[in-house]
Amino acid sequence: MQDIRSTKQVMAQAARLAFPYTIPIFAGFWFLGITYGIYMNVSGFSFVYPMLMSLTIFGGSLEFLAVKMLLSAFAPLQTLVMALMIQARHLFYGISMLDQFRGTGWKKVYLIFGMCDETFSINYSAKIPEDVDRGWFMFFVTLFNHFYWFSGATLGGLLGNLITFDTKGLDFVMTALFVVIFLEQWLKEKKHASSLIGVLAAAACLLLFGADSFLVPTMACILCLLTVFRKPIEKAGDFT
Image 1 (cartoon, helix red, strand yellow):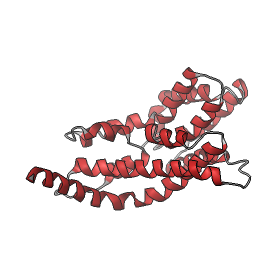
Image 2 (spheres, rainbow, N blue to C red):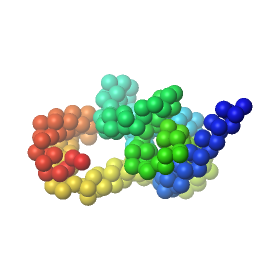
Image 3 (cartoon, helix red, strand yellow):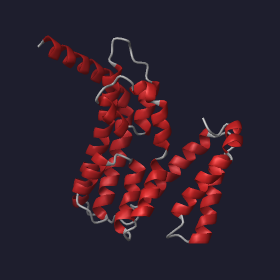
Image 4 (cartoon, one colour):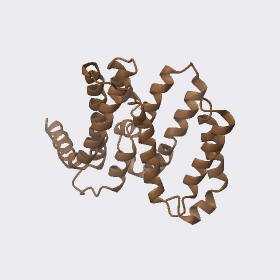
């Protein structure tokens, strides 16, 4: 009984410390999550789709893009490549978190699954007091952020049925999301080499392959160019 009480106290202490770190994430995740749920609803899907997708995929940009994938022709290979390209940055997050996750036991599985950009930023940079269990702290940061996105997407899917105004153009939110991500990356860069590679590669592939088939060639082209010019780009300070 003493061990059970001790475990509960450790969990409660970690949860209390983790929650304030996630409050800013709550505002952003709920707004985007609700928007995503509404977008799924007006695209013809019931609330079950955003609920399950937010619970199992838990990748905001990929989930927005998945709406178009579900409405397009069956193309499993293209879908797989695009999903890997969009979420590939998490491979680098994972490598940098290997030491952080060591000794977390069964929690490591969920920590790996639930590691998004925001969760990574908190768990990597947070100064955790010595008397707080690091594993449980990271677990609750991940759980809170996951719940914010899941609840927002589910609520948006339910609210979509109550919307009576014209939702034409709502799908532009995905474009706006990627534009904001691009602008944030542009502001962080010193020489903008990597961003210019992305823009020029996308423009060239759009001209060569057309609007319906340019995404995968663009991502492959960007990957190759960044690999070839990695060293000069690192010297320029674009990779941190």
